Image 1 (cartoon, rainbow, N blue to C red):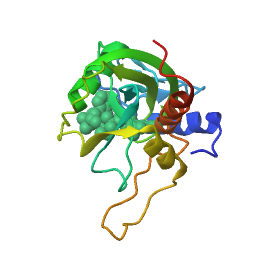
Image 2: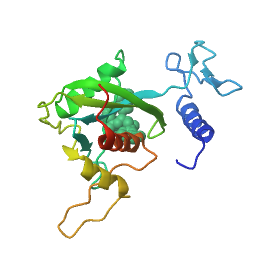
Image 3: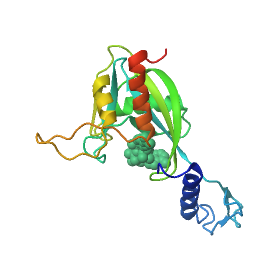
Length: 207
Ligand SMILES: NC(=O)c1ccc[n+]([C@@H]2O[C@H](COP(=O)([O-])OP(=O)(O)OC[C@H]3O[C@@H](n4cnc5c(N)ncnc54)[C@H](O)[C@@H]3O)[C@@H](O)[C@H]2O)c1
């Protein structure tokens, strides 16, 4: 993905969208692509279908000195990432961040700051919206939702800085564990984690 230009990534996402939207959901008739390939129209119901991206919030939670990272059982061994989740219909980004953090680890977000966004093609087009969040001092007890996550934990700046330098996936160590590492540079999760580590060396998250 890193070597693809933005235009190539857009073209691939668009081609996948066309492939998956061949029929009208109201009439059941085949839809037709316009010349530019920017939409599909149903000649029968006249409905116009536009390519869509699903908004996903991805949040790096911090308690001021540590950051919270989590893993799903489907992740490569040893890899931890920021908390991510699809926005529900009708939600603002802020509401989605607060809900996801509460649902996945049982924490209440205190302050929230937007960082950056990224188009993410896997498995379908998502718009990843990256945020930093803090919890109130002393309110740091994690309750991992085991339906969504395998594990979640607080990590120190030193641990995370070391993990950022590693390039997984890793093989099992002699003691049976896998080294702790984080997603690669192409993922916005990596950028959020790197940003947090860099901020720790100068100042904490702006209030
Ligand atoms: N770029 C990154 O750094 C990065 C990091 C983490 C996650 N992600 C991506 O973010 C997305 C969400 O992460 P996750 O961990 O919640 O994923 P997930 O695949 O575990 O999805 C969780 C649940 O959301 C539901 N879902 C699937 N597609 C949906 C949609 N379009 N709208 C609403 N709900 C939907 C499904 O019920 C699914 O079980 C995934 O596509 C993942 O690949 C990207």
